[in-house]
Image 1 (cartoon, rainbow, N blue to C red):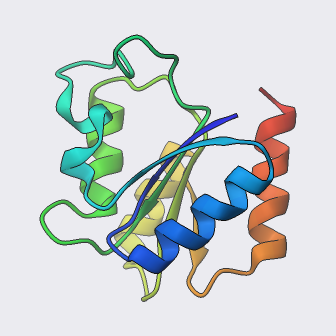
Image 2: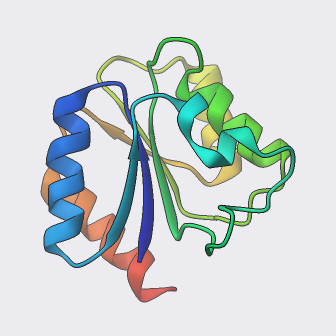
Length: 128
């Protein structure tokens, strides 16, 4: 399974990145959405010379481009990845929650309940 993880918190990138690697998943980490190839391409072509990610996980509250804008950008570019999760350490406005539900995005509150998060992730893996 290929996972793209975007979070401006180095601890989250390290801890989740290590969790995924221990499970023998390929994980690409970015501390800013603008550094992610998915953000940089004009249309969904995924990564150059590589397959699309199976799962995209992004933080909600980041400087420059927040998780909402990043997910909206994915949808606008017609991203083929249908397994998107949003992590948040603070309350998410109802209007954003409604948009996430429409997109099929799963939200998780920080600090993460790792059991719940791993269950969601394993269900994604079994459907790929």
